[in-house]
Image (cartoon, rainbow, N blue to C red; front, side, top):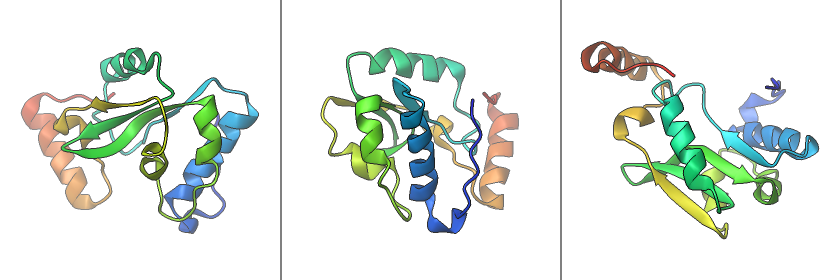
Length: 135
């Protein structure tokens, strides 16, 4: 793991993604996994299954309730196209133009992205009410 500091977070999520992809490119990584820290219900098993489904493709992105989202995996060939993102443009925009890509369906309950106090409350209720666990 390598921790990167985004000196301009106000520049949007595209800037954060761009920094990560540049680090992957410089390190000559074979692939890059985009996984958000504020999505606590993603399980190890889901990531392992997703990696298996990625085999033979150059990009794979999760989809829940018809919406593309992380986690996502991109081959080294596609990392370069993600290094130019700016503003609040995420990988979803670039994914639609990638060849040999695949969508991987994720259960709705795994897709909770905690951005607000209300989201956190929903996560706490889900964790205690359904036996959910954090990965």
